Length: 127
Image 1 (tube, rainbow, N blue to C red):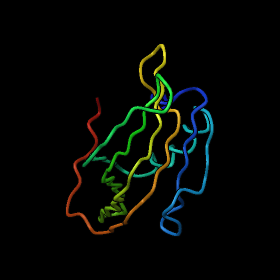
Image 2 (tube, rainbow, N blue to C red; image 1 turned 90 degrees about the horizontal axis):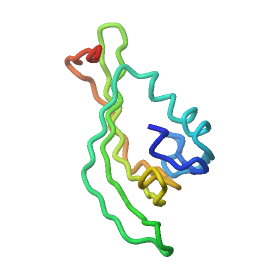
Image 3 (cartoon, helix red, strand yellow; image 1 turned 135 degrees about the vertical axis):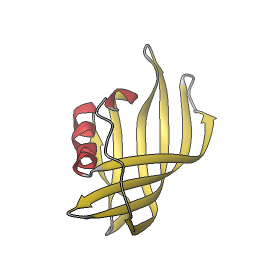
């Protein structure tokens, strides 16, 4: 996932559920990898893109985008499974590189959080 970012990229994230607007900044691929590692603590995730808009940037070789997403974070606790769903948006800046288009800046805002029980969760595919 970190390969989608430029080497000097910035990721700004909130601290849900207390803070839904982006407040923590992480610069560079290693810092971004560390920041998103917390998602690995849940049993499974699924991100559904529900809308996206892109525009040319102010300089050649750049672009901007806004991506709306519903991110499910399923957690297994004994016999119970909980789904914490974030309705979020990514406000992105992109840069054309020798490796293709990469994210140079991403700001994540959580618009709403839903929490509800899940009857059953398919185990991860071992592939």
